[in-house]
Length: 306
Image (cartoon, rainbow, N blue to C red; front, side, top):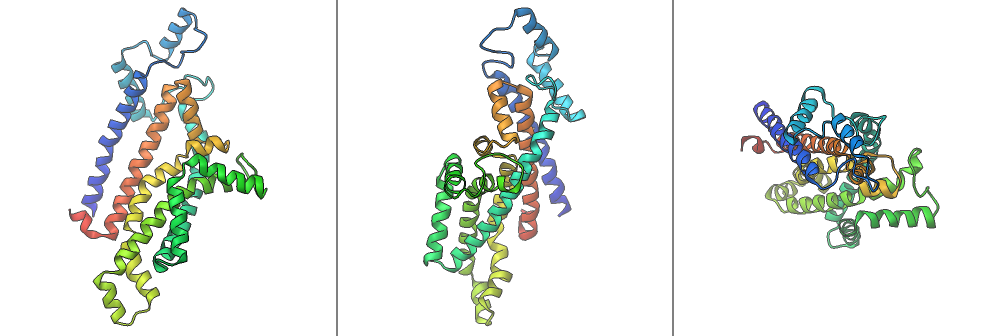
C-alpha cells in the first residue's frame, strides 16, 4: 500500500506542472490584455505598467519567473486590477466562502443521493423508484441557472421562506446549497441505485439469503460496500468542482466566492488571478483524485496490485 501511495502521490506533480503551463500560455495568447480598455491609455503609461508587471519581457521569461514564484514562494503574484490585494489575498478572502458553500452542498448531495439511491433500489419498479428516478433525471438534465431560478421562484418568491440572494446567516444558504447540490445528488442517486441493483444479483448475496440473513443485514454488511465504489470515484472530481464554487450559482445568488471572482477576472483579463484560481482548482481536483484512489484501493485491494 505504501508503494502504491507514493506512486500515486508523485504522479500528481507532472499533472500540476502541465496544468500550470497550459493555463499560463493559453491565457496570454488570448487577444487583449489586462490594460486593454475602451479608452486607450497614453503610450508611456502603458509601457510603464507593462514594465512594472514584467509584461514587456519575453513570454518564456515571464513563464519561468511565474513558475519560480509558485514553486519556491507559493506566490501567485499581484492582481493587475486590484491595487490593494494580491492574488494570494483574493484567494484567501474568497475561497473560504466557496469552500463553506461547497462543503454544505456536498453534505446535502451525499445525504439525499445515498438515501434516494438506496430507496430507489429497494423499491425498484415501484412509485418510490419512479419518484427518485424522476428527481435525478431533472437534476442531470436541467442547467444550473434553471435549477437556481426555480428554487428562488418557489422558496423565495412564492413561499417567502428565505431571501432571494446574499450570504451570511443560515437562511441565506438554503437556495445556493440546494441549487449546487441537486445535480451532484442526482448522479449519486443513480450510481448508488445501479450499484445496489447489480450487487443484489451476485452469488454471495444469494448465499447470504440462503443462510437466512435478513435483507437489512445483507444490504449493510455485504452489498453497500461494493456498491459505493462508483460513488467514491465520483466524489473526487465532484468535491473539487463543488468546493471551488459554481460560477452560475454564485452569480445568481450574489455570493462573494471564488467563482464570481473568476468570472470578473476573465472579463478584466486579469491574468494572474485567472491562473491562480485555476491552479487552486486543479490542485484540489488532483489531490481529491489521489484521495479517491487511496479509498478505492482500501475498498478493493486488487486495485493496488494492478
